[in-house]
Length: 138
Image (cartoon, rainbow, N blue to C red; front, top):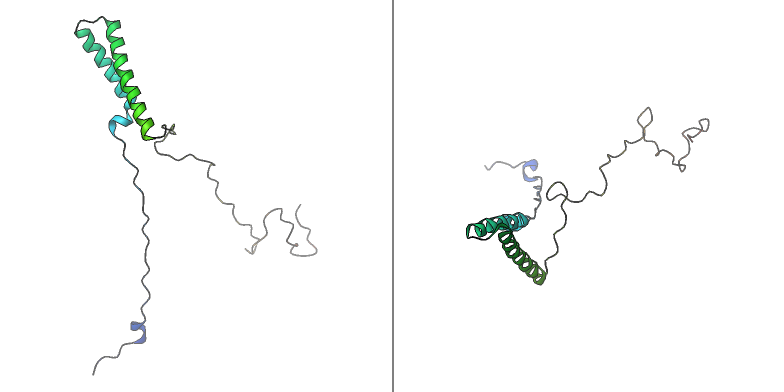
C-alpha cells in the first residue's frame, strides 16, 4: 500500500525570488588620459633635457619642449571636440562621489504618549486634545 501524503507536504510555500541589484560598471580611464597633464609636464622636461644634450641652450630647449607639448595638447583638444566629448567636470574631494545636495538628517522619532499611543505631530491643530479638560499645547 503506498504511503499517504499529508496535506502539509503537498502545499509547499512558493519560493521567494531574490532580485540581484545590477551595478553598472564605470568605464575605466586609461592611465594616459587620467594623468594627461602630468604626462605633458614630464614630456616637456624630457624634451628640454634631450635638447640640451643635443647642444641647444637651456632656454631654446625649453621653448622647443613647450612647442611640442602645445602641439600635442591642441591635437588632443581638437580630437575631443570633433568626437563631441564633454569637458571634464571638476571632481569632489573623493573620486567618483556624487554631489551631495543636503546632509543626511535622521527621521524624527514618532511622538507617543506615556502609554505609547501615537500622538499628532508637534504644532498640528487638526487633532482635538485627548480630554476637554486638558488644553492643547501652543
